[in-house]
Length: 398
Ligand code: ATP
Ligand code: MG
Image (cartoon, rainbow, N blue to C red; front, top):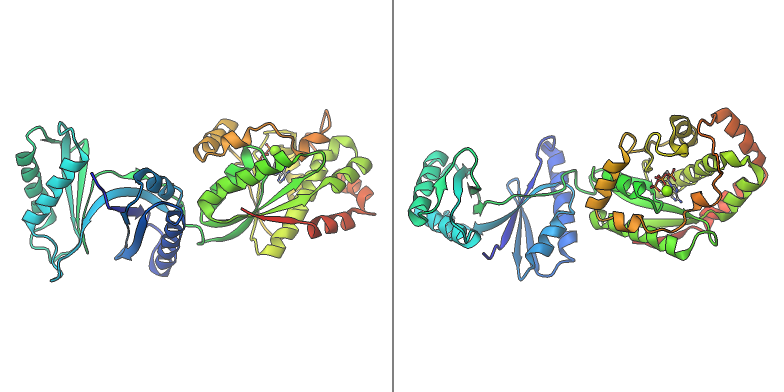
């Protein structure tokens, strides 16, 4: 079967009035973005509350895989569409029946299947109504293919026939990712480490339509070029869904060494995490980001107890910190990581700046007042070190 179009389904609830155009225009833009990287030529159109992708010389699997990365799409329906004739008429009943029979013949080599015809007559001027049309087409299909049987409750083939601005025929609905199209929300700064959690956190927030900018704190020469490349690769995974991601690589070595020198070692991780948050907050301010995103989850490690989360969170005061994984179990996070193709990269065994100076017994119940007190040991040089770190920010467009 040579499909030549896709009917794109998206959740329409909550997308009414003016917002609907913003949503649809963003969706079309994102579809164009992903298809521009695919072989073939594509025409994307928005007609009367439907988005169509017409395709020629294309690779079916590549095209579908790309559409599956567009947030906002709930269903991808490989379709045959037939335009109106010069007089603006849809095909008559015989014409529709022929198209439907050709469709089944092409898509289902094995006819030993149950089916149901579902007709949607959006064009009310069409001379026969949906029920009559469905009955008529059902009869014609039974005549054409003796092995086929009707099952109105659990059909193997649900044949959708739409009489709209075009005649659309489709039976398969390939699930899309859902969510909201990128570009409908605003931008947030993702703290992206090389681990499993933060790429998943970025993916989840992006899925609500949020553009992603990212920051990675590295500590050369204690962390390697490979560890950095791993983070670049993870940013690439996210960019498949979001389009270009700007990744800030912040050299954290001097800050880390200074904390190591001046503060109790069991508080090292927590103080480091506070400086990461502070710097990310400043970068967010400089780049128009409206929130920070982290991969934190309650109780996962010592730095993520509720006490630790309080301590790291309190340094960010003007914008929200989004922690989409806060109540997730590790396995649930891993499942998403695998699904979005981040997992194989995330588990590569390169050192992380947090693990290098990590204490044997880090505090698990830090008290913010004590931490603040110990941070006073840093006052002499820390502002200068933070300033330098931000000034030497290496920006990589991924
Ligand atoms: P992940 O799997 O995302 O690395 P983790 O389980 O290792 O998380 P932590 O090391 O406590 O957890 O880090 C918590 C969060 O802080 C991370 O999810 C990430 O958002 C941020 N973070 C930690 N280290 C870095 C880093 N080197 N650069 C940027 N962000 C970081
Ligand atoms: Mg980590």
